[in-house]
Image 1 (cartoon, one colour):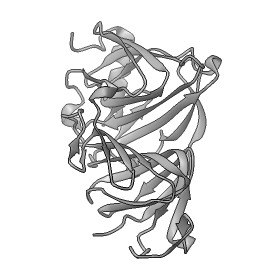
Image 2 (cartoon, helix red, strand yellow):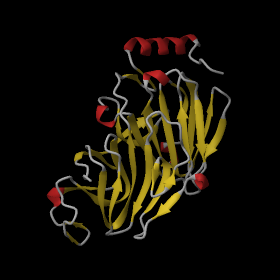
Image 3 (cartoon, rainbow, N blue to C red):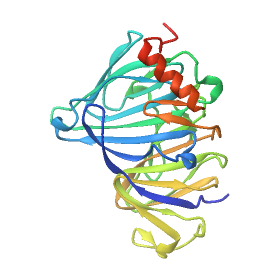
Image 4 (cartoon, one colour):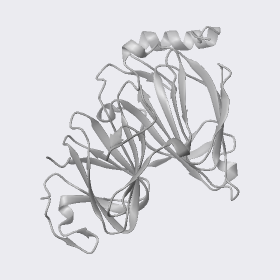
Length: 301
């Protein structure tokens, strides 16, 4: 068994998207090869309604999947196929845009005006770029939560761990999407299949992610590693990108830590990307936008 080395530690950057939504982007746009099959991760967290109520009005997607996970507040959504609904706290929507869909997402805060959620984009292989669009809407009550003896909790959105399997399935990259909470001072080792690209995104508390060079029995002092050169400390809005290995090791700080642990099989295909449309060639990209302008973008009813 081998602990995954830490490739990079990244702080999410302030970004404005949609019609003026203030959010933090952990990665996306530019070279995302190290994250393949994932393209983008946004943390839309705000307690000022004026910074998010304008939302994400009607816009197209083609060639990708978008995964929306709500922690606080809700998101009202609708699309060109006539689907509409509301994502509440704890819910997940996994949308396969495929050949093309036009939709809108309008965030609404809770009774205190707080809104918090994530959107992850996953690429589709060339063989599925033009597949029929579909949704997997998952209510919070349908997402299994497993608890270890030390109090570590994992909500299993997609993939399997500790005997639990998430409700989202049939996804091209066979991803694993976990919401992990480790209690204060506890150390946890979690399996991640070695051929996958993987990252952790911390959104509460802090902790140290052990590097590959740290022995499994390294002593600790308090809640940190005795040798900080063997680990990277990550706090709120930090993303840890891992290199290859089959395990991830985390030592929670004195307030515990909560993070998303995401992994997927690389697609390893050319990426031609502009905004919400991701294809394999520039010609395919130009064709997609020409079809959108001409009103022939939608291929499936």
